[in-house]
Length: 248
Length: 119
Length: 147
Image (cartoon, rainbow over all chains, first blue to last red; front, side, top):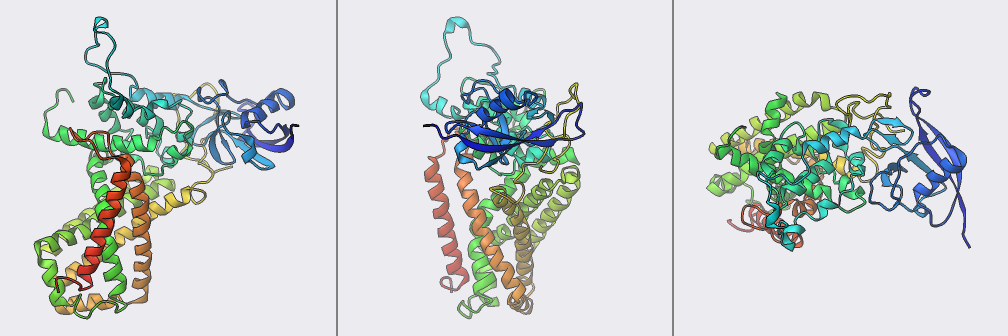
């Protein structure tokens, strides 16, 4: 019943102890019809070459671990079915990231950008526990709900031409998450985050490629968030020109 | 210079945004008639003759529209060319490239102001 | 393999314990797939810059008298100018369509106390404004009204 299709996977390999620079290695994989790209990579590691290194975890598109470039496009390999590919499939580590080994990229840079936007509820004074849960209307939630679906898979960073050329740029996910909190009715940290948006991280460096939204597997639409964030950052800037501010 | 550019980014972005929005809306008819139909002789004879053109342009609304047609596209153009330069690996030269392009836009906008004032 | 991107792209503040391979550009960048439209979008900056400078020249000529204006208008008949304006017209349409697609989703949820209209309404309003203003400008410039 199952129609096994043999495909050749051309996979980027890089061992910092042995290779001066990345190279490719080909594997012939008998692919089951219902397989995702990740299944093929796991087959390679399990059956053909245990030295292959790649990140993965949940297998259901919620952990964000398994992002890679497949046939030139940033892809969540546990989500992407193999049947849309041909006889030869190219698998590379995510673009725009330093590569630690094989398909494993350096995450620390992303985490540092994320921390800059303080992606949590910021309040001058925490609500008392006795006051009960913070109330929020459905329409207040709707304003940021989409942006909260981000799984930090970093496909958006791999797709963004500005990330490739401007190392200080905060990048799609960090800006989208910062914006998500800025417009959350429970949050009071917009002014602080807007300073970050107008600083070196420069939300205005986004040049409307929209690739981030095209590749996002969770339909977060970071491009919408970034451009809304630009507008809000301008309002914040204008308010700062007119109204006095303490401290900064 | 880099710090100055960062601080001016919100203003530059506003001008660039209007350059795209208002600039595009105004430029469509302008490019079609002034750039294509009129030179090809497809508009009525006196339409863009000096007397009529000057009368319309010197009207307060005319001056405003012409200023927008001169200045706003300059800002859109400058910002996008800066972006193009960065895209093609010019990130480290950005301060110099941006300064040059925004200087052109600034000078052009100021000259535009003079040009509509002297109509 | 795609070419190397900025060597510091996505690099952490402090390097990790092992040597890393440099970050690489998205393989389809700049002229394949959807990046082509993006690169073209940026490249229209050159067209807009030239249009602004050309408009400046025309307005200046208009303020310099009949002879200067006539000379400027006549020069627009040069085939190179015609080609440029044909390209410019296509560019302006391309920019409009692409930007108007983005504009509705770029509106923040609230501007002060005001809530923007739904995205499809904004999209329709943009096109309505584009058509209305263009029609008005064509009518005025081509001599249809305010004769």
